[in-house]
Length: 346
Length: 251
Image (cartoon, rainbow over all chains, first blue to last red; front, side, top):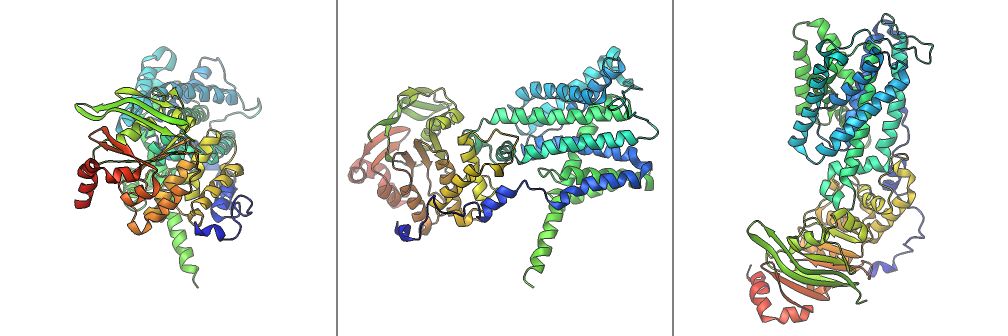
């Protein structure tokens, strides 16, 4: 009441946009210098390690798969253990079309893979996303198991347990051929697709829609109370996430030139979940860090200790679960803040 | 000013064998400053949940400006102008105070389903949210996360989120609950600064706050309306004193 006498307030006052909180929000989507790092590293890798391009390709596919999961799990808080359902849907779409000589053009095949995965995401999401927590977890698992069994039983089309070998994929743009011995094309093609997908996912994450997904994760009841169509948002997010997982699966089929039941495996779904938690979920770059750490370690430990390499990964995961709940990225942020806080006073 | 906003007719709700609310006929006018009091378990929060659409009634109906909205879900009712606050904070704890308010403003202006431009592009949403925070004297905390500010200030954010929806009817479930008594005046000031035409229904245990804020008071006991009148009438009502105010005095 008495504060009315304080100097001119109200809507005419300039400087709302200059308030620190507003500045943070207005500039949140600005590109930071370090955001170019993954892409520079990927390009440098191409020239520095020509013998490891196959590894690099599968790493980037895993990153894309983990990014798609981050959208559903990290942003919207949809607890899923069945994300390989969409990876497999994409992989089998590409595989079936190529194996039966229906369609082999790679880029449009990926779009079809995205569509097929999105359709399954939409259909299952409409049912699943009425539930939460463990029920949701079990239902996502069941969806994936059903798809895997369908792929197993549809032997005449899918090759059943043996899968679809020796897929013939047309050259990219009709020029660049996929050569299994020299995976240069695969690597650069995957890098380009990953980049395009990442730009889309990043835009989405920083949009008002992405922000409202965070709201749903942070407080579901409050989102209902501010009039948000929560169920619809979740279904839309799940569908988009499925589409990106489908693209990752399609890339996997194209670059390996085969599809088998492992595309729909629980092992795959669990691994990508571990990767995302390892890197840090709900923060985009967790997928990059987690996939690089996991697959890098897997690669080297498997060479050092061919019989017991999983032990090393297990120990790492225990450490992350105990001391770095927000993953490697969360831990680095904490260390960085402490470092700055220590330097600031002097 | 006496235009009818919210009305209930024979509104009832059971939970199994428990009758939480029985045949409540209630009216709330535009510009009302109405307090709902009663002992614990009287059905006050259930009543708010029924009005907001968080729970469906077992019987009876809810009308907003004469239209039956009983079948409308909570989100639809928000669009029609009913907003609420919670007895226990329901905030986005990991987000900043400004982001919390932007969430509701963005939802109201229909920006929240856009996925193609960044949040920062909607300067209208940010501007309006900052203005709201100014109004509630929260702007110094705008950049802080909810988990970093004291509980009393968090209660103000609850109110800011609700006002960001520009409601015609505002339902407040114990806005001062959990706030140290020395700070409860900031809640009262916030409520007093609400736009006049909003119809406000408030559940409150703090009698000081009730008698300073309310123009009318309804007493609810055992899931039914027990008495209604001006604060003075309620204070002087011997029966009310017996069932409620007296208890509060002893407790």
